[in-house]
Amino acid sequence: MDTPRTATTAIEQAPHPDAIAGLYDAKTRDASGLNARLAAGDLLFFNHNGVVNPARSLDADKPLEESVRLRLLHELEADLVTFGLDYLGEPGPSSVVLDAGCGAGGGGIMIHRRFGCHVEGFTLSREQARFANAAATILRVDDHVSFHAGDLRELPLESDRYAAIWACESTEHFDDLGAFFARFRTLLKPGGRIVVIAWCAGEGQEAERLKARIDDHYLTTIHPPAAYLAAAREAGLALADRVDLTDRTTPYWRLRESSQHATGSERFMGDGYATRLVTYELFALEKS
Ligand SMILES: C[S@@+](CC[C@H](N)C(=O)[O-])C[C@H]1O[C@@H](n2cnc3c(N)ncnc32)[C@H](O)[C@@H]1O
Image 1 (cartoon, rainbow, N blue to C red):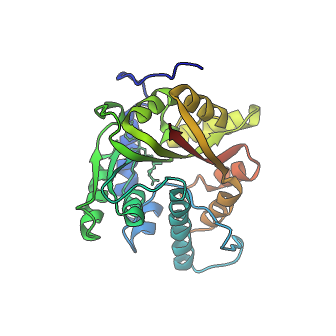
Image 2 (cartoon, rainbow, N blue to C red):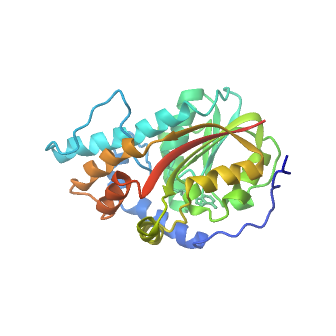
């Protein structure tokens, strides 16, 4: 058996973390932007795709009032978390879950509501952490849930601290996936799960062109699915489950494209998912 890659303290990250922080600071501050509008009702602020789960039917071409469309987009984003948490194991009420790249807190608050556990979230963006903590206070979950403006690369490597790790659309910002996974393995308790949900790069020249466009627009370094599997293996994490969510996220992007508050990336993202030049995947990893 190969020796698992061990956690190191020095990990390069590109694009530069300051640029990523600036991007999310701006998205969070923009009260008239799509993300903030979707969070206005219940204060669950997400920066991730929505998915259409099998129990719901959606005709993305059906004309809708904008307020109905926005409500639906928000529900589809929340449905992603509801779906993904089914793969996180059963962290108990006294346990702590790491929300790795927590954004503005919507996912972390949902994790607490599902399991009753403590949640520690980390984001590069001060504005996201500020919004997330304010929402947690208003929603009266701040005794269990806290969000920090901090870099995951600098998180003290306390072995077995977390019962589970949730990394929803944050690993796209990690150019060295293996190094992050090695850290996560150290931080995770034996038997604990890591759920990674990620935009994944496809193969071929057209997919490479789309990857370049996505990386430029979102300050990411998206990886092919094989890179996730290799990084997990190298870190000594077993693949417990893998779900391809590409077909379930395409209608979300089509619905977004018809919104008055579309952000400009909807056409190329929707086309990319529809043609599978980019895929949307969940990986559930386990520490033995
Ligand atoms: C697309 S957002 C996803 C946010 C959230 N997980 C969600 O689902 O709404 C990516 C997040 O990853 C965070 N991130 C990326 N690299 C990070 C790092 N090195 N340390 C902490 N957070 C990081 C960003 O600050 C941002 O909050």
